[in-house]
Image 1 (cartoon, helix red, strand yellow):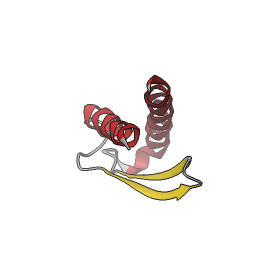
Image 2 (cartoon, rainbow, N blue to C red; image 1 turned 120 degrees about the horizontal axis):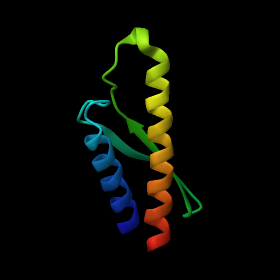
Image 3 (spheres, one colour; image 1 turned 180 degrees about the vertical axis):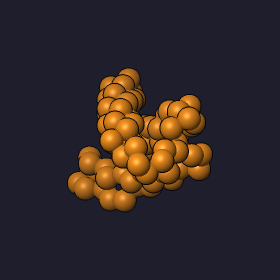
Image 4 (tube, rainbow, N blue to C red; image 1 turned 30 degrees about the vertical axis):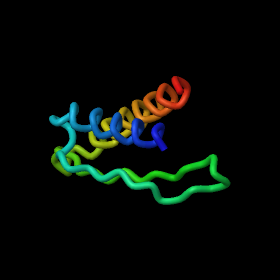
Length: 79
């Protein structure tokens, strides 16, 4: 349970540090747990970009996902 809490905290810290890309007040939820070893999480956030710059929004999203993967790998491997 501690690993999950650390992971959620790091996700929130990362998104809030990118305040020029994302609005504050994101929501991180655990949706499902399979066989006590696989967790499905949901991340809801709102971007700060005009809709006519849609390609840039997808780039920000891709960078966010890459950082989330790195963060989760580091958090899980440390403990």
